[in-house]
Image 1 (cartoon, rainbow, N blue to C red):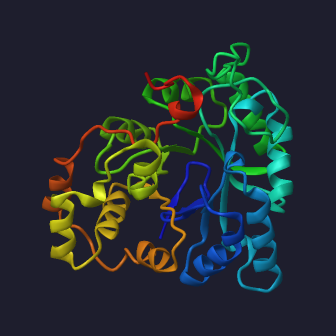
Image 2 (cartoon, one colour):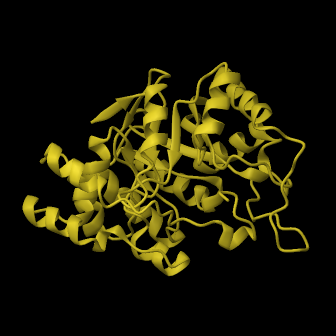
Length: 309
């Protein structure tokens, strides 16, 4: 099952995010995911594991496990490389051992002090606060992203963590429209207005934290997981599915793409098997009522500043 992007390319509606995957586990996880049926993998320079993903993909292609043209590979431009877009993209391609990317995203709508192409440590000042570069506009960054398409390095380009205002501005100055806006959205942070705005303007929304980050975000950020919600647990019982499957199905029925992350084989399988049932309209409406307007991914913990403030 896939969504056709405004660039004309098809994007599978469920993928596997590789954030926080241990280097030693990546090969087995990717191989198992491909065997289960995953064809969409979401990477980023900032995840610091593109080389390991590339090694696994190269072996998967070489052994005939899957063909390159059957996969949809996304990676992202890190904030410190906004002034070095082409070099950063080529660096990611080299690490991933690919000739082209299916999708390249601006990871965050902010340029920070350049620390070297592909070097993605947060550029903090002496005061411990993110060192933001005020000389590079998002428009300048976007036009460099557009160049990647004309160079044949990237098939589709998009944005990530953009709100309505920034997305509207991008649409105004873009020659190549953003195909995707990848954002945090889940039952506790539904962001219905942003989702509807993007979809109205033919921008596909991808949910990068479709399960609310679960245990990992609770440990890192102290957030509350929607997987423990009594309403969602009740729906899981009704449909004889796990809470995660209900939440992912909800995301798909909103016409968003979901990219859950898991390092456990049984969870990889469970998360992928969400196409054999459909949530009734009254249950989709019921899930609307559990929204807490609560962001679980809080990069301010690392940056010393809340860019969403």
